[in-house]
Image 1: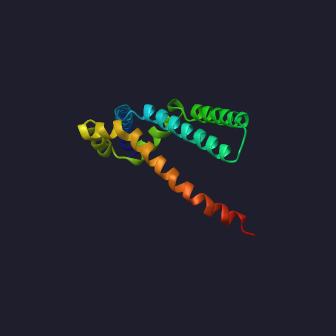
Image 2 (image 1 turned 90 degrees about the horizontal axis):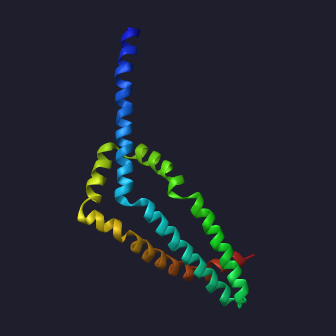
Image 3 (image 1 turned 30 degrees about the vertical axis):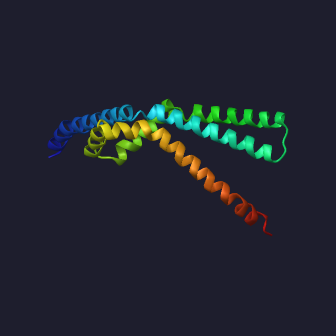
Length: 157
């Protein structure tokens, strides 16, 4: 009986490993098709630009000198450079790959690949940065409206 179990393990373990390799390869193809590396880079650039602009506006509104504003913006640029380095695609890809292979089944990955290769899927990928920018701008506007209320709550005894 033990011999049969060992024989079955020798037969099926390589098949399971082969399936995982195939699944991982499909996920990597999905990342290429979705252009995730470039989208991540664009999103970080948009966020950095937005935050640096907010710092400038906030400090200018407080009557801060141009020199102090420039210094604060420089610090924020350096912080974003660190974040970009730590969250570069080379560093994040193994995390994404593990998550995608654990969460999605192979048929689901096949379906995503099929979709993103269609004209609608390509449009989704190409327009995602503009969509993200529009959403961030609108959320930023909503948050600006909340700031006086939040400050009021924080100043309460």
